[in-house]
Amino acid sequence: MKAIIFAITVSCLGATAAYAQKITADKVPASVQTNFKKQFAQANKVEWEMEEADYEVGFKNNGTEFSAKYNKDGGWLSTEQEIKKTELPAAVKQAVEKEFPKAELDEIEKVTYPNNKTDYEMEVGLGKQKFEVLYSAEGKLLKKEEISKKESKD
Image: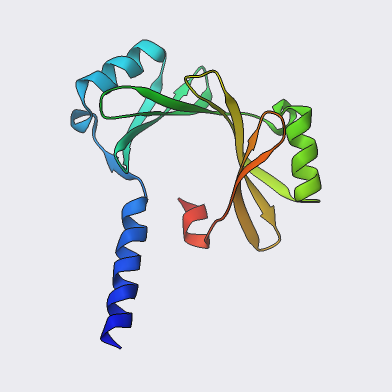
């Protein structure tokens, strides 16, 4: 019985550590801040988080919501840009409609990487179930993860 309780406790602690933790700008390495400011000089409403070993910054740029992720050395890993459903490529729209007929889409984002690759991430609601999904620009499902009710409120 003690082993089961211990295993559950360790699992819960691990799950908690996986979530992003808000941090102040003074806790962000100078190289990360410098690269962010070079890349997004017009950014405002900047908020920093620590996500595992990486730094994620949420901000607005010309009224659009973005987030960018950097490693501890300041290397840019990805940028997520809020987009409308109408801005999804046709291949992604068709793939989503085929995989999740009549689903509600929320938090649709265009994800750009340093190698110029682009993916599309969104939340898909099917009744009481909600998933976070990631599609390639060609419409290939790359990730499908169920979101718990607590996570979807974050």
